[in-house]
Length: 304
Image: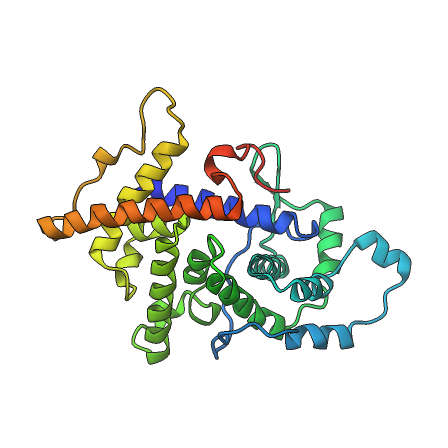
C-alpha cells in the first residue's frame, strides 16, 4: 500500500511541477497547502479576482531595468490566465499562488530537471522569486481556491486530488480540529463528489487515491465498490503503460485482494465498473490528444 501512496505523490507532484514550470518560469517549486480563513471559495471563478485588482492598484512603480531583470510578477501572470479563461490555466494559477505561499514561508525549493530532486534556491532564484511574489495579497491566497475549484469542475486531471489535499478553506488540519463542524461535513461531501466524478472520467490520480488512501472511505460518494473498481482499473492502466516489459509486474491485477465486506454481486459490479473506468481513461487521452503521462514522458524531466 505504501508503494501506491508514493506513486500518487510522484504522479501528482510531477504534473504540478510540469504545469508551474512552463507557465512563465517563475513557479517551479513544489506547492504546499497553507491554511486560509473561511469562508470557503465560491463555486465560480471571478473574471478578475479582487486580489489582482488590489495588487495592481497598490503595486509601486518599478524601474524598467529592475522589471526586465526580475521578470514577470504573480499578478501579471494571473491577469493573463484570467484572459485565457481555461481550467488548465486555473490549476496553474493555483499552483503559482501556492508556490509563493511556500516561498514566503521559506519552504520553497528548486527542482533539478536532470535529477528530479529538490535543492535549495540559489541566491539569484531567491531574488527573482522575491520580486515575483512581492505583491501577493491575502485575497489572492483565498482566490487560489476559486481557481482550484474551476479546474476541478473543468475536469483537469489531478485537480480533484489537489482539492482534497488542500482541505476545507485551504486548511487540511481543520478536519482533525473541527471534525463535527457542519461546514466541514459539507466540504467532505463536495470533495467526495468531485473525487468520484474524476475517477469516473478516467483521472488516474483519482483512481490511485480512491483505492490506496484510507481517507477515501471517509468521503461521502465513494463506495466500497468504487474503491475496489478503482484498484482494478489502476492496475490495468499501469500494466498497459508498461508496454509488455519483461520481468516482474508490480501492477499485476492478481495481487489485489477483494474486500471481505463485498459479496459476489458487488465484486462483479466492481469488475464491470473497472472496465468503464479504464475505457474512460483511454477516452480522455484520445479526447485531449495526449499520450499516457507515466509511459511517454521522459522520467528525468520532472520540472525546472
